[in-house]
Image 1 (cartoon, rainbow, N blue to C red):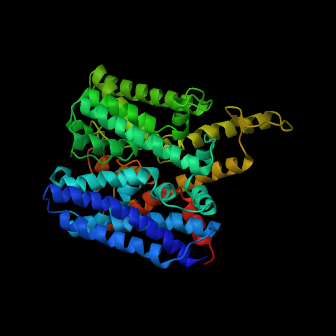
Image 2: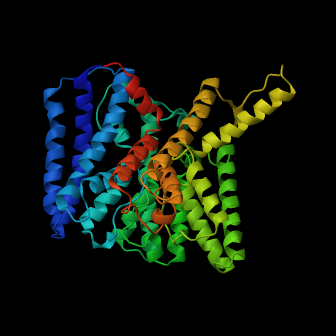
Image 3: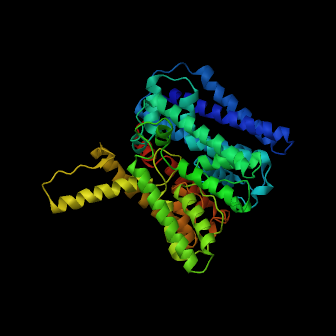
Length: 477
């Protein structure tokens, strides 16, 4: 493995982070905020160290699998580390572990926070928090592929590691075009939501920040009460629509706009995903209504937003779910595990894997009845490769095992079971809020230092989909 290759690409990552830090500095400077010094030095550090590889490392041809793997994993870790700088330099609630937690949560689009007073932050820091979502949503590594010049071999090596096999199922383009399709849909949805939110009463600053968080399915808000602060049904409906869109495979959205055969209306996975979302909303609505929590309209309003928010791993909130009835909480926990589709900005187990699991289960039941039969698993006429089947089942097992281990670790730190269990699921799924002490309108400030660090590892494992991290430790240097 060539160390200079990895360092050159980490330089690219630093440079891109430096650009976003510079934008935040300009905002702080124009508003004469106390955070301007923190952003100035943070951007300077990233830009200077980001430029070094351009100057001192010669042109590189091709990348090996091991090099691509290291670039992806170390690129994410580097991004989260430099993301701490403005928080640490500014101070406030940002101790070292809190700055690390907020940075990882932002870039992995988890949306969990340690902050007690979000509205007390300078606008430049609020913007930067949301920007970390937006950078992380499309992926810092995909920014490298999109913006910086690289050879075909380099692009393919990184692309194959950053884009999962599940995501590729609904892409019918070459690697370079896929990255452009992702960027086009991503930017277009962000701009469109910003405009519509402003039409429903949000100011530009709140609109762009919440659009960053929505399209990235992140969940950082500029308000302590999240979306509940606005108490505006129109704003809630707009955000729900864009959360659902951001939870659907971007390749299918692009195909729908371009009138291609591959579109959201012909996808059986999209249909199933929408049906499951609607079913969850109805169950939670009826449970809240018959338990006497709200009127029928209020039950539908709150249930719809919370199911969609957790089911797409966004994590926004319009009400505190900490004291909801147990059936509603169980349904929400299920959506926290399942989440939305591959090829979107959503984290979690991915609905595609759940969909395929039941396809595989159906085939196994058929084989029990007809042991010598030949049964193929297909999705929209496309046969599912046995390799993908094995990857899917293996991932489900490793994913569930990981959040159970995390739950045990947190419980050993004297954290109550519901908090430990829901926090573990919410962080590995990059969802954000859990229940009890880390509920939808709460935060993670009360979690012990060791617990916060463990949860950040969970976030990174979830964003990198576990296998890449495990594979990195198997690489011989």
